[in-house]
Image (tube, rainbow over all chains, first blue to last red; front, side, top):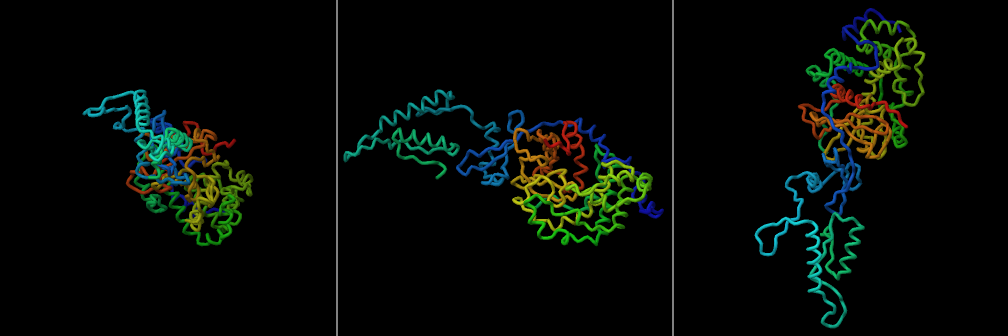
Length: 188
Length: 287
């Protein structure tokens, strides 16, 4: 290729100073000095499923040192493709909201205040009440003599955050107790 | 999905760059970059001989699912005198007139082959002899050649707009030219991830939790670096191949302008420095 004075003039009209020939457009030295002052953190990402209903939308959760930094829909999840309903969008608050209760509060019958209780106390109390209600209301036979062995004063609503295996166990327990009003919240 | 925040206007980018003051970029580097864009814009306008529709026939779109980029560099019919002039002009901007004189004084530069070599991801072209004649190293020649051919690919990507589906092209390299991305944008309420091609600025949708370089999907080894003072920037990193990809989270974009790929390459330079410091690179070794 032949170059001419005209080409030089054309080229030098564009810029007077080039760089020493290198493979880089920019001198990174100032950027390195600037980057050294930046405050940074590493975030991890994991995928999970929204616990609120049976649709099972996919989420990406970002964490730093075990703390939730961000939650968002997972664009690659075939069910929601990144979209989230208002509840799913607020999932961040399961981990981060000062108003969220993290203790058992109990108000005794007729009382006008809440008392803080332990989880162990609460589970025992629930078991006592279930047994008491079942024992008081168990129907062995109907009025026309048919054996039914059922309890009609307790209903079960399952739970949206229960997975299939947990739902199976809950259904088994409910049937074993004699419940007949067995439904699932996600169907309602 | 909301209107894209990402725009493709070179003139606007040049205008914005003129008023940009960044602590981490030397003013002369910024001036040179603006001049480069201006020359590239002129070269794009002067390439009236380029026929993108002919160069990307319908059958090329059917090959996408097999991972074949749309443009075949071997099919590029670049006029020799256009290539000569373009290479010389871009060299003048990048290296200055004296160095340009020296680089081209050896003569015998097959400009068209040099340009094709720079975008050849299939290994069909060899530029070793030309590198020797021009007296510059491979990296510098690749920079020169890619900046020269870039304006052609700005035009070549046009037939591909809106025609590359997420289901067909599942690869981390550009479906138009096969180049790697140099940054990505997270956009829309769904947070879709769009890598941006380092050569032609084409954007395509890619998985959020997958490395664009090595296809790693292990969540434990895919992290990102957050910058506290700039929450719209992050650097996606892969602990498996040690690659990194600068990312703009457009959902958190607060700057009073749209996102211009040609501007963001400059404004994110400190992220390159940060990634380099942390031991990541854009040319990762793939195990």
